[in-house]
Image (cartoon, rainbow, N blue to C red; front, side, top):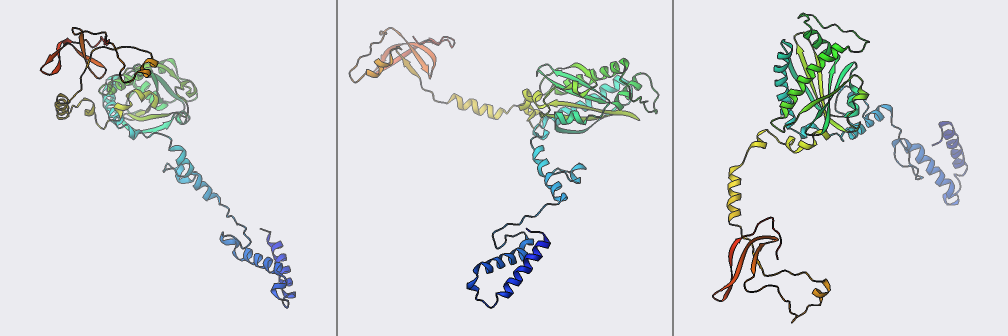
Length: 380
């Protein structure tokens, strides 16, 4: 579309041309009439987003708020609300932990066990609470870890994969203060800007061993697994146990020791949980151990009355395909069997019994001598 100044000049020129040619018939100058109609349509209907009379399409430009809303970068998304737009499409690739309902049961057991074990470990009043269980990409989780912190890499022996446990600085200083005899009612001192000392790392490692033992016990009713301490890191780059785009389960625990405490987060990649994925899909713990005796009885009764087909095999032979294709009516096939040769009774491809051939009345009969061993599959 032309700028406003050029549009006014063209409109004035068209008005003069139409005034000067008003006495002439409209059929004498069809091009001028068509051009006038085109400009009138463009000037009159170009702002409504429609299509002009000359076939030109006018486009509407999105403002910044509409672009942010489309991409999902508006303020509502930044404040923790549900994401929309392209951000929702990108985040939809994550698997929700609600598809593994038994994880909630496992972590509830972990909270109860940790409350007791940490009370015995610290000789203090400890309260453990589960803040949240969510699914997150591994790379996003590493970028969200508040530093300084201690990251523990542990291995699930039976599942042959790794997990990650993060202890924040508040929890580190609190556990050190408690184990070294700090007074109650005083907040733990924090010394920022320095690496953790050997004593601090050793005391935190002792607590991590207690938590890993409780985590193993929490999974025991579902599937026996041993979580073994592997290493302790302070740099998230050295604690990479999975691809950044892989999804993982993150359980955030809050540990309070009167006026002291902190957070502890346990990350388990979905690849680590894959060996027990079917068990985690259960709705309740009894699904694993419960037995439906009614269904078992009905299935057993139906199996006993199921009809099966037995075949009496006199002999088997191997021949070239050309000979088999050349057989026709009247061809003879000699069997390597006599009247006293053993007859094998088969059910499908499985040999069942061995017997002798005889006659009963007008029917040929087989007398079963003994049962065929299952490991002996030859039918000769």
